[in-house]
Amino acid sequence: MTRALKDIFSDGFPVQEQHEKHADFALLSLRASLSAYFETYAAVGRNLANVERDDPKFDPKYYYSYTEAYLRAVLHAHHFAELVIKKILRDKYRVLALRVDKLNTVLFDLLDGKNVPDEELQKVNTPEFGESLDRLVALVPGRISSKAAQQIKDNAALLRKLNVLRNRVWHRGTFVLHYSALDELFGGHLLGLFASIANAYGQGSPKPIWRYTPLACGLDPVDEIVKEYQQASPSQSKVALLKEMARAAYHAPAYFDPRRHTNARQVIKDVWWMTARKTEEAKAARLSQSPDESLYDIVICPVCGLKTLLRRADMIDPDDVDGKAICLVWEVHCTCCTFTVPNNLGNPTEHGYTQIPDLFEGHEL
Ligand SMILES: [Zn+2]
Image 1: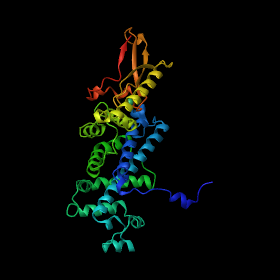
Image 2: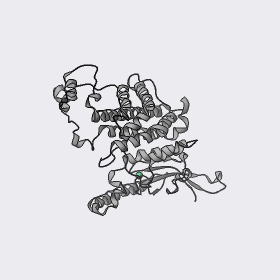
Image 3: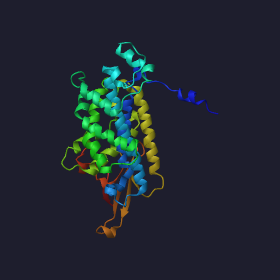
Image 4: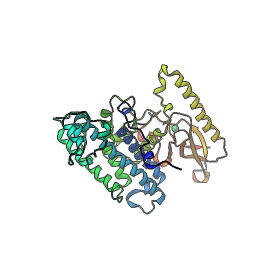
């Protein structure tokens, strides 16, 4: 038997000021949005070439997985922007983070300069996204001069478009951007802007909770995707490879952060990490001994840095390749961080990342 509804609905906890830097909803929403955006490649995988422009070959099961990731990416991106705008307003003028079209006691208490407890403030509705944005734009730079506020004002037109996109999902549920358009929106506009706003907004946080675990290969997929979209002809397969690296990095256990464990003061954590590392690598090694004809070998994963990247290969008939038997790697999959890419994305070196050994190769036997 469950409790009364009023007991269930009151059984929560407020995000207190002292926890704000750790559990900031805006930064958590950004994390959820980026993680979902990076999933859109995994949602289509080998079907990447068929997802464009309503190609009839686009398998419905990929359509649903893409659309679900799309919904999370757009809704959380909008939520991040809305919460940052309202926090900036609230920090300067608490009254401007509230709806002021209906008179109420809380409003007058704030205007009188009285200290209104958070519980009372939470009883008053907040303005719509567009209204909050208009208020912020009107106050920058004369009355609000933070870097994050200025960036929001400079990109107000983009954020209004994002609001429309979100409303087409939230209120109507009728419109989804194509895969390549979503790449252009995030790669060409939102990723760079949101990373910059989040860095300015989250200053003082113990760690940037919106970001993924740093990659073992040293690449930062957000920076690389932003750079790629500054090129005249961005490579969709290069961006797909970076998206998959970022998606897997969100799944890489935090204790595998290679930079965190170079500090001598973290000896105990390092010992724990080494134990966990051995466990993960032993698990991958056991899999390699199972009867699976497609398993070729295990190499170091460029995302989590462990020897847990299984490479799967096919034997190519000697009659097809000048009489020589060839073993061709067609997919890599990490049993630790879940990084998975097929060979049609190409080797990282083909995209300019020479620090990562080739994942796909053909060997003469
Ligand atoms: Zn991995």
